[in-house]
Image (cartoon, rainbow, N blue to C red; front, side, top):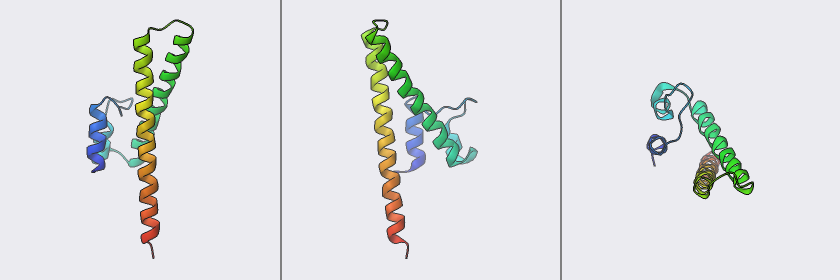
Length: 102
């Protein structure tokens, strides 16, 4: 899978927007560096996980409706799954690189 395609698909799902309004996909095509893409992604991931925690806390105290809690928790679960998949790919790439180095 092409990383730019993955970033574009993620952008279409509503993620990876930085403060200036540019998307990480434009950064991936030459407008930025890999480090800023990762930083933006992880910043969004942390925010999503915090929103899930806030929704769960609000649900326990009775201040949130069930639909918003389920939505926030689903978003947090999706982000956690994405992070885990990315971690697995990075580890796999690292192992491939180190095993092919002679």
